[in-house]
Image (cartoon, helix red, strand yellow):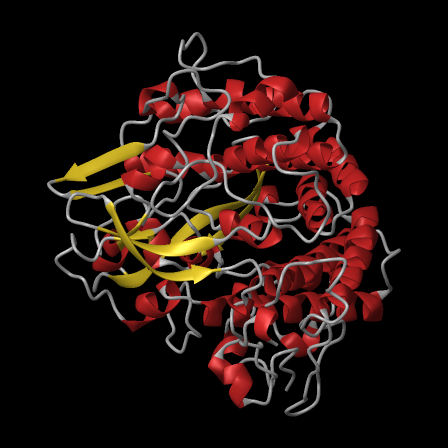
Length: 534
């Protein structure tokens, strides 16, 4: 019995094997290979964990009557090594990405046995399997390790890169280093792009060529290979990206939260490139309705929205902005003393396993890659190349698609000079006097504070923070740019009251601790001493 890439990393049990779409010992036809690849996409997303880790959350303990949401939420909010499990927990992100990698490797082994990658009935599956394997490792290395840094990644703890089906009992794995993981991800992406096709029954749930280029864009951006990120983004977006961005006007006309959220992740939307199902009661139920103690206590507060993100003055805003300035506006909820802001991006779906008894699973759908994200990632790469006018052109496309036309509050014609002048008048953020401008400490070189480049980076990161709210991607930018963040507490009238912790740029808690079950099996824990004191 094979338990690929899991023994010693996650539990290997019959329940896991029972969930596979075929008999693992007999993947002996091209159709069975395709069926195997359904399992090569994780059904647990890091969005909730990463979002709670980031600066998109404050603590409402003095406002929420249920101030004890549970040990798991307290651990993740406090940046502790997490011992508890939940559907959205890092433990499940770890398990299910290794399972996805195992399925990809099983498919690759079967492809080799059935005739190889050059067989026209197998070549597309070969490309998809490589991309799935690369993406699973990309998630794991970016959540459970420090971010890629050309200067340090050759010695920073990595993860194993699983390239074969594991047949042994209780194998032991070396963590290796981040640089090695990135080299192997790049190899899989480049090879996968040669073969991947678009002929799927449900293409938005697979790596099509467009989705593969979106992944390549993000990967090369993180890998500090700006030219390759731009090239991949060009292949993804084509010559008329404005025609494939999100239809925010249509979203704004939806009658309620659920239909708007469902449309946000609909497979017929051109902007959605890769969708993933996610077994998550937190994301679907609470990020659009905020009904539980956990979601109300640790929330994207109106204070954050007003001073840092949605309603904070940005270089494209003239005199401040309100929700009505957005084509698809956020929603503010003010219940007596509790104030928070939500974006309707995550549908609450329920799959019945026993309709009569009303039993089943709460799940949702996440738009893992979108054209809007790729556009802003290309803008970031342009800034790093000091091609500021091109970066501004991408920002303008995003601004025009995000905000209502003819709105006197919005400046639709920004320039590198106007962006630099704007940020010259914005003080750097402090926890009790928050602004949109935070000190940047990336491992790669950028120009001095106040420069055009630094100012442009603030603008792009600000746009990305707005665009990706609720999906956890802000946390990845915090890591990459060495942004210092805090655990802040608000009082009963939503004023900032205190901080209980600070995460500095060199804090090793920026890498999630690997789950307890993996450590119990002998997997090396993530280092936890402060990097500055080693």
